[in-house]
Length: 112
Length: 114
Image (cartoon, rainbow over all chains, first blue to last red; front, side):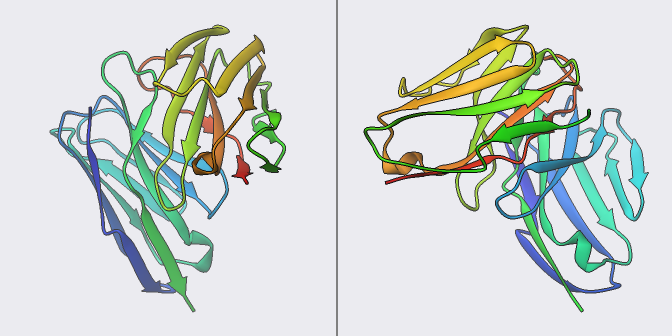
């Protein structure tokens, strides 16, 4: 199965600071998804990346997929308390793409 | 309507009870999923339905029984559960199965088995 490693495991940043979360795969990614989850709640879809070198942005969040399609990063600019939560990267499982295999998540806390 | 709804939000049940979780979407998606998420762990796939047919059962014990009555509705019937089955149960849907189909998740049902 495809293993996804996320780093760091947890992150505490001061409001206004930038931060980066990484997601690394042991195999080439067919598709890479970023989700955000508040504790005990459902997952909110952020972005999907498909092509090597692809970069997408939404508001203050930017996600990139490297050329080899084995590593993705999520960058938050000028963090706010509303960015707090757990960030999960997910990848299509194999060619059939039936479901998502998730990394263990990165817990983000933004302090005033 | 661009959301996945799940009911109930919370459920507490005994090991001899029978209960059901319900998931609904009206986005015209033809693929629906059940995931189980334990505390501080990522979601783990349980079942996949594609065009109302069960496509994948990830070796889930028979005390969990999924049902897809129509393209908008997905149920998870629970019977004789164990305390270790306590978790957040997430439902998701996508346009179809296959690569590069983002999944939309519901808010989850928090299940506690006593």
